[in-house]
Amino acid sequence: MNVSARNIFKGKITGLVEGAVNAEVELTTAGGDQIVAIVTEGSVKSLGLAVGKEAVAYVKAPWVMVLTGDTPIRFSARNQFTGKVTSVVKGQVNAEVGIELAGGTMVFAVITNEAVLELGLQPGVSATALIKASHVVLGVSA
Image (tube, rainbow, N blue to C red; front, side, top):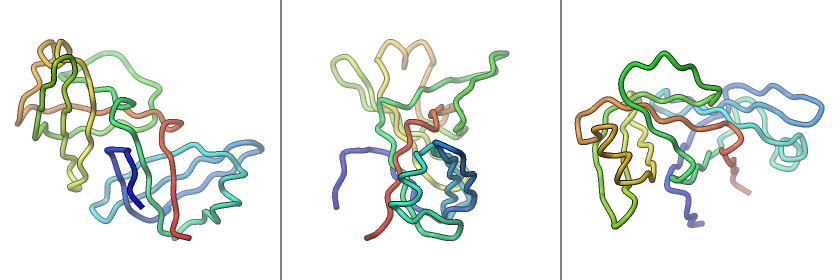
């Protein structure tokens, strides 16, 4: 299966907290990077989600926010990944920024060219990718 989501986290479910309506699912990649998804209890049941099960987390690049430097602001986004910028591909209005995490996972964001300049994004710069857990889509093999 091919998907349009630029960010793909393959791994095992290492945490599952079920609730009345939603569940919090933690996925850990082979490199140790972790991403958290919020899914419905219906999805937990229909996908057979359980600790130890292989799964894939998908996140579209425009859903990823990027920050640089130290900031006194705390964010509610559950997934906060700090790594090094490896690529910046500029288009007419937007740019795709690639950030490599410590475990080797790549995270891609699509942000405006103006934001790239304001943040000073270029290869080698430390940057943090923010992804809301509700923007993470999980998939499992049939």
